[in-house]
Image (cartoon, helix red, strand yellow):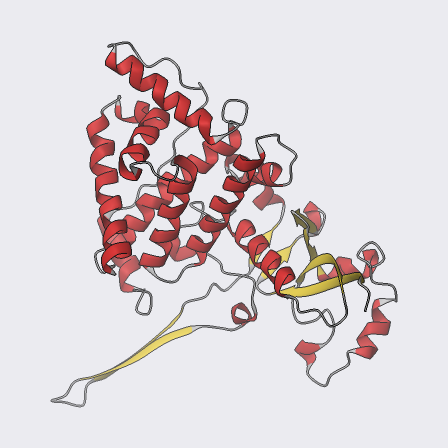
Length: 352
């Protein structure tokens, strides 16, 4: 059989795209588009017949299973394939695009306020409930808590305005080849961003933390290097100014998070990883991605970060001031109290 061109349409649950930003957003070769808009632009998407034709073809007695009724947004990909080919490659691209879109929430939405979207599981209402009994009396308690958001993730004009102070739009420009960096650096930024999206969607502290640390290592180190030492050096090179060049602060920070990472990878021990550690790694990864994606004039490859680190280390050795950094580097932190962290932990019964 010969290959031919196909359009694959996939419902994206718990996501909406408003008409005030055009009803669609493209991430690489995946188009996320409002179901309402598909009717008007179906020829552009490669759908030959009117939508009413396919509504009859795919007719079912279940209301939510009607064509273009199961979700408010669909993901679209044009693909060349044989009719009987499996869709593994296409679904991999869909998943990557979902995680890349998820990064628009990364660090902007606190961990207990995130909005999950994508696969069919996010079309369901999730309830966390438990029953507690006093063994010596008739006292009992039923606790029921909805753990998914009441509203879907909405991409609208307000969202677009928020994105002006986030790395997401500039990251998209890099991976969509609208901003020029080296091919290898484009791949690394894409991979690190997918890891950030996976971290944001992770249900467990250890999983989110590990995705973050892998992304940090990917962005800042090379194979065969002393990972902990180079992470410290290169974070100081970029952000040492926020601690008045006090390297001890960074050494202590990286020593802790790298120790947690090593205990998990080498000993299978993850119990010590807390939500505070996750937020710390969120902060590092967010600020690294923000500056890498927004400072492409100065950082076009990993080697540019390494060269900056080497120059600043040389100046430190010579007792010279740090004057070589790009002037527009930025570092953002959230203010979260110990009490707030404890509250988050108390709401995460199934998310250890």
